[in-house]
Image 1 (cartoon, rainbow, N blue to C red):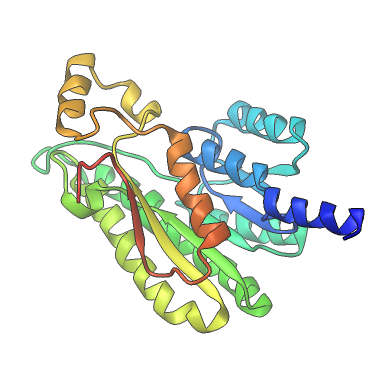
Image 2: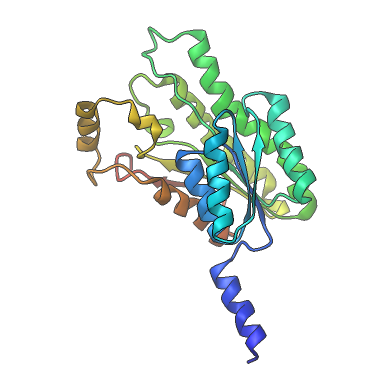
Length: 260
């Protein structure tokens, strides 16, 4: 077997996403950042999206380029239907293809239902659920045209089990799960898969503001007695993208056993 053939085989194993373009929304920090880094490490060209954290987005891009990857930044708020679709359009204009869409952008506005305002409700639904729909609907024509696509939507165990003070967040994430199942049914004939990764409590900025005594209480409810690392969520996403050709309409729970 020739050296060139051996090199190509080694490259396909180490960089299974070479030649693919991925858009990860909300990828300047936390889980989104880890997903962007993981997909880039596996060979994908990664479009980084951010709303306000430009410095963080630039840092992610620099890290990807330092390791030999290709990445560019696309600013925009996925909660705004015009901006969300413009983000996808800009990625397609830049790269002429979009193979992988990870709808990760998400926010919380935690309050009990008695204290929740309409703005608390709408802010979360607009970003988490509507943003997922806007970006997906904009990406589909290209994916259908090329007869290939991998859509991974980031939900949460809260969308499965509920959680005190998170009616808006639970509704948005439960909606994402249901939305993904419909995508899977409608898009299978185009060789497009749609799946959910549902993290549990994860060591990101979202937990940073929680008092330490409350964090310990939360850990006590997790059978594995620790929070997930963002990189562990990213590996589940990468599995679906790289090895999930016959997996669609499913949920991978990365939650330490807090919801089974």
